[in-house]
Amino acid sequence: MAIQNYGTVASRNLIRAAQGMLEHAQPITVLGDFGTQREMPQNSTDTLVFRRTLPFGATTVGTTIENSSRYVGTPDITASNFVLAEGVTPNSNTISFQDVSVQLQQYGVLFKYSSKTEQLYEDDIPGEMVKLTGETLAEVMELVRYGVLKAGSTVIYANGSSRSAISTAISLNAIRKAARTLESNRARRVTSRLAPGVNFGTRAVQPAYVVFCHTDAVSDVRNLPGFTRVEEYGSFKPIHDREIGACEDFRFVSSPLLKSFLAAGAAVGSSGMLSVGAANVDVYPFIVIGEDAWGQVALKGMSAIKPVVLKASQTNHANPLGQFGYVGASTWFATVRLNDAWMARIEAGVTAL
Image (cartoon, rainbow, N blue to C red; front, side, top):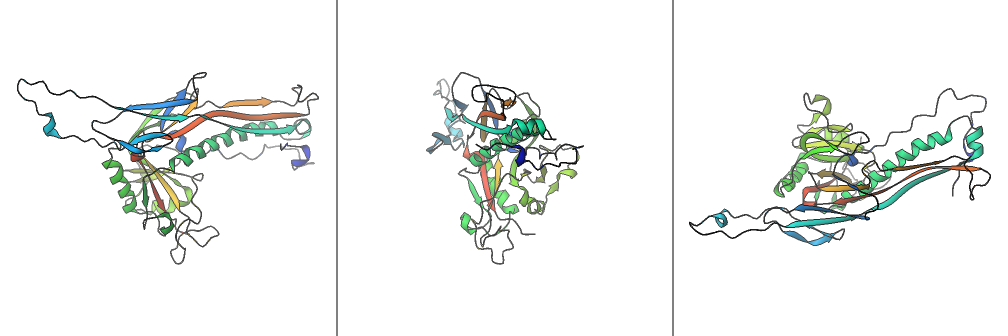
């Protein structure tokens, strides 16, 4: 196990630190503020079941994803079947439910430091570890969400019919295809997000489909015809601090954590698309979501991160002389796609600047 020794921290020796260490980057969690939120009580189970009523006449998809079937969600109603005959009691109908289960996984971050580092170094190393622990675990949870969402089965390619053919940036036509797909599957626009703060709850937002993309794609998004920057919203409020603007029925939110499929597209050639050290285009997922398309659950609620701070002075059988301490945190957490028909992934290149 790696340990933070006195010698592994570059001392400033003659310069007493008048200022603290440089501020760590704040956790960039955009996905975590959306999705259907659930909390798991302690000492109950490691599996949560999301249950909802199917639209009348909707059928369940035959394939399974995460061991649970999905439904298309398009009601199949024929008006003539509901005509009443005089004096005749109509046939009664039943409702159907769908269960989607997800199993919690435990994630953790742990730092170890020596007592010499704590007692002699001029900066508060354990204090900085506390900050970095929270930020790191928050980003780990965000990457778990991203891994689940970008594996959705509804895919729209900016050009061609496969990822390996991608050689163009996102276009208005691509996002309109996503709108057509979500609308035809009766997806609802997102109307709420997780409220900021330590309490579990949500707050209302202006109805829209939300698109999550990498920060590399911001310039291409802003070049979409009819795009409105967030500064120009007027009476509209941004749905997230990292929202960059809107186009038609979509609000765009960016994050550097939502990485591309490196060199997965067509040959760069004269396409003008970005490629980091390879001959093929880097393909960027644009995650488009409607209301209740996916869910997330944590033990005891969405802020259920259990911190651990063991100072070097705390002696025990494993540390009889108080020579080292620990800073860390853990959480039980899971993400699940609830309905692939209510979300889509647009795959596109990004213009090289």
